[in-house]
Image (cartoon, rainbow, N blue to C red; front, side, top):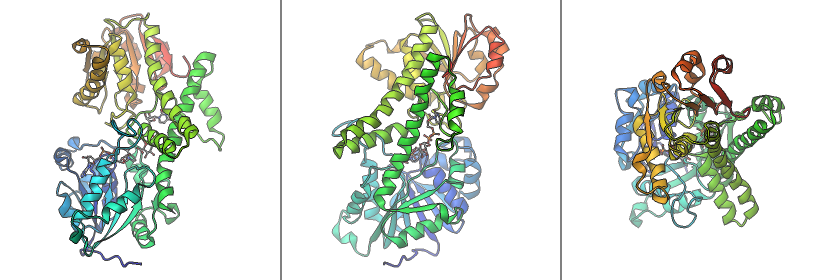
Length: 478
Ligand code: NAD
Ligand code: UGA
């Protein structure tokens, strides 16, 4: 087995990709391992500028607890930079933490992962590295991507550049959830390392062992590790879809989904987590990772299994769309000239991330129905809301709403109570804590009646709403 030599006096890690995973993950490693130099690299100059900002409000990722960590490590052993090649060249370990979205054209369009960014990274490492480098898949990837990465690493653009270079490739998927990323990284349920090179595996395990018990570090082969990440997300998403399907049955029968969740969740074989019904799962990963699994199953000729997983994504879309149908029905079949307040735009609370948020689908549907939309979110910027809605509405305009784009009426509001003036309905889409503490007496005086609140997260104070003359619809209850 090759001896791993540390290239500088100090062990140096680089991470390509300064996003939702690269930023927080590297910040926690730097915090827990002051003896390691950690460089977070990105080709997006603005992202790096924002990570280096003096004002933590500019950081590109909002996560509770992240700001404090960055402020105590940045400039000491944590650095954000666009100098990619230079930092790869003397790194002992390079994490690949770039985006792996669903392909939007060509073979596998709509299902397969677009691996162009991961391939580019592998080429960057192949060309810029020196000596022995441990390359770590942190991105979520299709099974057997490590084989592609190895091939690229061993084929630098110029053959003579290969001299003295060697690589070990590991899979180390990330299981953090947004909004709880720091706690998830500091106290992980497990750390998963897949690989063949034991020395490399133990070098990576050695980093985690600075704060994670060795018993929680699972070592597997490469393909099991890659597949475990896709499987974990597929299981979690499937559970949400299951409870959302039960919510619809509850609404039809008079059962209460929260009571059903409690009743089944106390069975230790089922467990009580991820049983909260809602508007449908969002976030950048569940949908894309299941679709990736769907694609892989089809690729390997497993058509029935592929259909099984695809149904989870289809049912989730159905759930997102049914919220609008309920709102339209309750508001006498038309939203034209009605003011609707959407509470929350992030895909879940405690994050500023809007990727695949159910709020996007719900907003689009409401706008197509002619609603005048006021959107509130404590962390998502007006610009981000506009970007998401223009993207999704432009698709609609192109397909069926020619030249009507200007008719869509939406704006972000900062003063939540101002937004309620003359509103016909309020829809709670994200479970921000502040929405559980609203003054319904005051809101009732501000709204136009008959007024409705649609709670897709079961977080509003029902007793307080019921004391007013506002009508309440609650997911999984009706
Ligand atoms: P992201 O889009 O927030 O960040 C990716 C970053 O990589 C971007 O800033 C982009 O500019 C940069 N990048 C792309 N190619 C580059 C290159 N060649 N050189 C330098 N920089 C480059 O993505 P993310 O949410 O951090 O996700 C990254 C990966 O982690 C994905 O595979 C995702 O599935 C996985 N993952 C995400 C989460 C999550 O909560 N977001 C959790 C677990 C795993
Ligand atoms: C998820 C997984 O939980 C992480 O383990 C994984 O690392 C990550 O995806 C990833 O690979 O990107 P994340 O998407 O950040 O994390 O957030 P979750 O807490 O899983 O929530 C996903 C969606 O499901 C949100 O829209 C949330 O509101 C919804 N959800 C979650 C429910 O509707 N009900 C629940 O009980 C739980």
